[in-house]
Amino acid sequence: MTEQAFASGAPSVAAQLFGSGLIGVREGLETGIVVMILVAFLVKSQRRESLKWVAAGVGAAVAMVVAIFVGIRYGTSTVTGIAAELIAGLASLAAVVIVTWMVLWMRTASRSISGDLKAGLAHALDVGPVAVAMLAFLAVGREGVETALLMVGYAENTAGSQWPLIGLLLGIVVAAALTVLMYLGAVRINFATFFKYTGVLLIVVAAGILAYGIRALQTADWLPGLAHNAFDISSWFSMSSWYGTVAQGIFNFRADPTVLQALAWLLYVVVVLFLFLRPVPATAGANHVTRSSTDTAAKP
Image 1 (cartoon, rainbow, N blue to C red):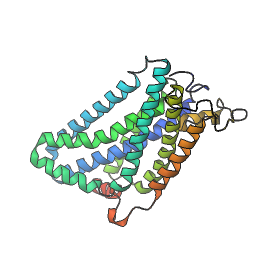
Image 2 (cartoon, rainbow, N blue to C red):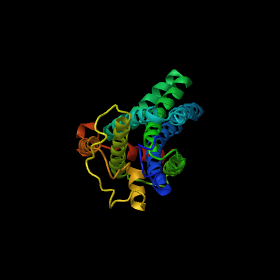
Image 3 (tube, one colour):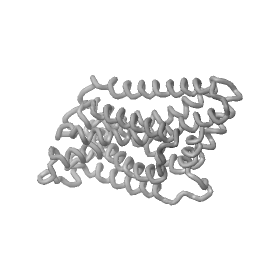
């Protein structure tokens, strides 16, 4: 990553850990809920012998996600200059598109995903072990690809630091522990509230990644307006201060954004928050998947 992308150095370790840890917890819980539904269904159906095929599918999905992350993140680490800015910008925009789609999709699909997974698994059991493994692979892989691309876009602003990856892994560990506790019935979480507020925060994070990607493309001369700042508060808002590193590390904030960056950030936040927070039609379903899946998983 070149110095033009950010002039203030890498964000603080705490900011990097918090931002990536939040991603790990939220995305890890989404994935954990999917796995929990599949496992609970097999246990209640007295089909424990198929658990190994679910595990195989989940393992393959995790391996694929790791390969995607490593391939994009570290495969481009030797690229410098304008090419690095171009790759960073395109990767950031791709991450924003996928995260936006997943956040908005989960808003309504969460109400029916439990029934869909159970129906799909019932059919896969009739087809055979490969179908069971493939179902688990696709269900987990969908969530994992989102996480990998989001992390690539998020980590682009950290000067090659490993702390975002560490924070992500810690968040995933926390999510895995919570998933196990939920399955055992030891923990109850109001997922409707959890996913609503973390969804809002992820949208703001994605807006920052969008702004970062736009500046990278401006630096690469793919977009105009690099010399036109919307404002410049660097005279009193220090990016090297604790609050500056937190704002930069979590939200990709700059004290001197370009006009295009500021407009894109504002438009994205307004439109996506409106779509995300608007009431879900009653026809989408009466109960949230996470509540029903937790109740199901608590009674294996």
